[in-house]
Length: 172
Image (cartoon, rainbow, N blue to C red):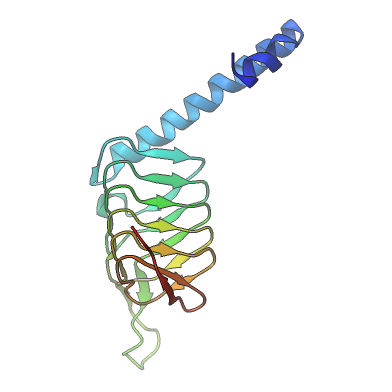
C-alpha cells in the first residue's frame, strides 16, 4: 500500500471525497493540457509528459519528439520554428524564443526576425534558462539553470552562465 493510500485511509469521509475530487481534477487537467498540446503542434511524438501550465505561441511551427517532458511555466514562442528531439527534458520556467529584432538594420523601428531553435536528443535544460533565436543544442547537452544560450551548444557538454559558456564535457 502506498503512502497516499495510507494517509487517505485516516481521513473523514468528507475529506476523503474532497481528496478524491482533487486527485481526479489534477489528472484530468494534466490529460487536457497534454491533449491540447498534442492536437495543436505540427508533430508530437509518443509519451509527451506535461507538468503544469505551458504557454505556446506559434503551435504550428513546433515539432516534439518521443518521451519529452515540459514542466510548469515553460514558454515557447515559435514563430521561427522549434524542434525538440527525443528524450528532451525542459525544466520549469524555461523560455524558448525564436523572435528577435533585426540588429543589422540601423533605422528605427527595427523589423522583427525569426530564426529556428533545434534541441537534439537527450538534452536537459535547467530551470529559468533562456534559449535565444537560431540556437542548436547538441545531443546529450545540459544547459544549467538560469543560463542564457545565444550560440550553438556542442553535443555532450554542460553550459552555464550569462551568456552560456562551456563548463565541461558530459560523459554519456
